[in-house]
Amino acid sequence: MPTSAKDVTIRRARLSDAPSVADLSGQLGYPTPEKEMADRLAHLLRHPRFGAVLIAESSEGEVVGWLHVSVTPLLEVPLRAEVNGLIVVEGRRGSGSGARLLAAAEAWAKSKGCTTISVRSNVVRDRAHTFYLRNGYEHYKTQKAFRKAL
Image 1 (tube, rainbow, N blue to C red):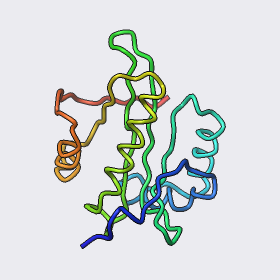
Image 2 (image 1 turned 30 degrees about the horizontal axis):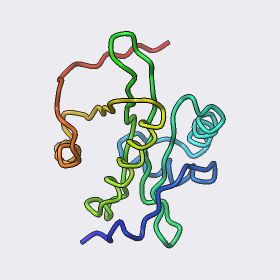
Image 3 (image 1 turned 180 degrees about the vertical axis):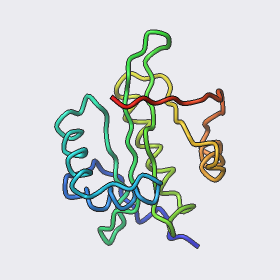
Image 4 (image 1 turned 45 degrees about the horizontal axis):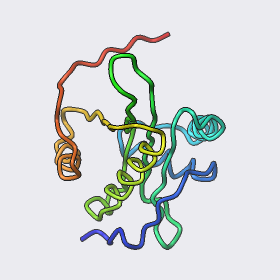
């Protein structure tokens, strides 16, 4: 059984978290070299308008999860936030750490004037879908994603 989230603190990311964030990114399916993650994290920390990176840290000082949340003003909908990424280390999933990260992201979004928050999740991530539904999110759209290299 995973350790309880009661021993987890949610805080803002620091540049020194980059190695742990990179490792967890790999668990999420997005392997990233530490140097590249440090560069990305440094950019986000220097430019908070791009959102917030929240860290779940155990009482022993271990980074056990992270969440990136941002606000993108859109013409077609009222101001909303989006969870861009969320991962909790294997072995702590189901402990409540992810729910604590979500709650912190929601509070951050409210402080920015957002009235809703959304998240996209790959269709193969059934466990994640159950997690979001359990935390009050509703499935409202299915769509295809397209990408083009620039």
